Image (cartoon, rainbow, N blue to C red; front, side, top):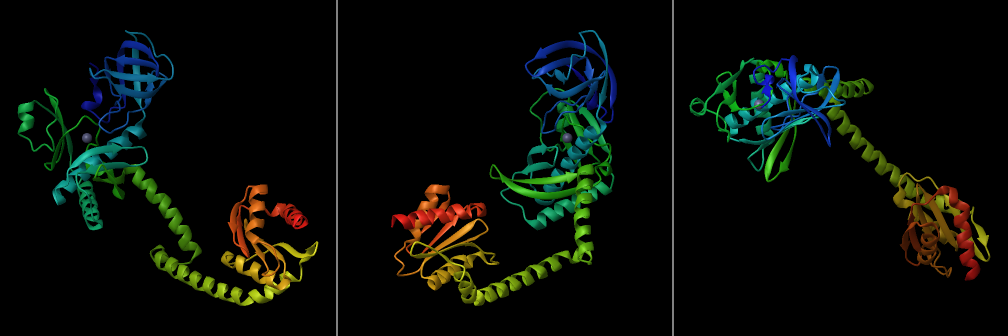
Amino acid sequence: MTERLYYKDSCLLQFESVITESVQTESGYAVVLERSAFYPTSGGQFHDTGRLNEIEVLDVTETEEGQVHHFTSAPVGQAGDKVVGRIDSQRRYDNCRKHTAQHILSHAFVELFEMETVSVHLGDQYASIELNNKSVTEEQLMQAEALANQLVSEAWPIRIRFENEEEAAKLPLRKMPARSGVIRIIQIGELEYSACGGTHCRNTSEVGTIKLVGTEKIRGNISVRFLSGRLARDDYFSRFEVTNRLATNLTCHYSDLEERFARTFEENKEIRKELNRLQAERMPRLAEELASKAGTAGRTSLLVESVDLANPKLLGQLAALAAENTGGIVILISDKRAALATAPGSGHHAGKLAGEFVKEFSLKGGGGEYQAQLVGVDLQELAAYRKIVEKQLDQS
Ligand SMILES: [Zn+2]
């Protein structure tokens, strides 16, 4: 069984060891060491990365027998060879902070609301705890976050203890582990005792900040996502950049952004309403102008034209009005949409015409006798569209 150096010291980033086994598996080269500070993926925490001699360590796993397998980008050596291991500090410290933040947060939810943590995920982007509860309120989240950050700022020392089952049973452990023998216990001040094999900070203040960033339902429970340490800081920096830029552009304080956004949104709605009203008012004149551009195909008046409308919902109405004016067929195109209209009494069917376009150009759409819609229209094909109509008129 590999001796795990991180069990006693989470800050040990360099160590010397000896290879006891060198294997080539389907996943690549792997070595087993007499002792190792590399943390293998387990208990919801991802493995460390780093180097063995100068060879990159890509993955670290553990076997059921407790052997730690170090997967490397190239062979490291043979059994009996000496190695120097170096752990990537940023990833290790990120993991320590996430893991410690998790203990603190789990403690806060139990302390305040008797919500137990039933599973843990300490991912690269964010970490999460699954609480044995169907739901959690905004108020509860805020309270748990506040207590967690208070515990962080109080800098409680974190102690690693090794106890036999009998001694461990006397401690207020969150959950007694299934395994027997010596039990590793992470103790935060006098507040929190958890049986855990992960890497943690030396005191709670190293966590920096804990920020809850969302919840989701999982297996009928509620999962709470959070950021801590560097990830929380980076998140704050990038959000600062965005809000600062917006506030500078709008010449206001960032705390006024919400109100400014709501006001602009309302104004925009009003302006759009007014624009639609004005455009609807202009419709008869616009229809006349368009009608004056109509040509003929055989004995039928035909107009195929692109128009720029602020309210695309008016496209069909405009086409119908223009068709009334010409007494023939009108096809108006705006932003990949087309409206087909035929004048009552013209003897032409808008829906059937649209069907020809659907067939010839793989467009989507359809309609009735006087009006039809098409989606996926390409303005470059205007001439080809006109030809289709002319062909239909020839056959009628
Ligand atoms: Zn832990």
